[in-house]
Length: 267
Image (cartoon, rainbow, N blue to C red):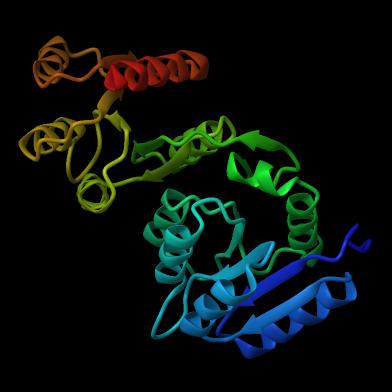
């Protein structure tokens, strides 16, 4: 691992003392000025006091977990670079972290080179650049769009693909594979747009859409479906989605539909 180009201040917040010490050692050897703590509350105090260039934040911590810390950090500085260390985090926690504009999300257990590279990449950006850009662990820096998209699809590979596709285009994208969980997320953090699979086990997409309308959800809804059942499609249209796309969906066409939905919503 090559040293970072310039001395930067890194805050590490991880309740695992061994992991905290390891990361502190790694980034100190890289020439960083490292501040660390195993407490979420103390981590927040250190963030206020030291204004670190990059914060490494564990999600799962007792008393004050990483999500609570991230919410407070966003209240202090909406654009501060925060890399989430996501070992053992649930899908819901990961989605909430992304919705709170985590700058990057790195699972524990990956090579330390990946984490050092992510910190190095952020440190080389002008401070003002981090207010409008985000990285997603692929070496590319992209413009961050201040709009969120929720993907609801029971096919894990497709759901993950769409989240990645939209994230790489700057959207705050997060996905769920269950209608009931999706409705809970909408209650907590109303997304700007929803991409909804019509055919799902448990709670079908048509029922999710009906529940969204009952709740007065104001965002745009784009339906995806492999069904050609005219009766089902007419029922879906009657509930007022902005678009219905037939699977397999062309990704660029989906992107265009999302852009139109968001523009019309602003109008």
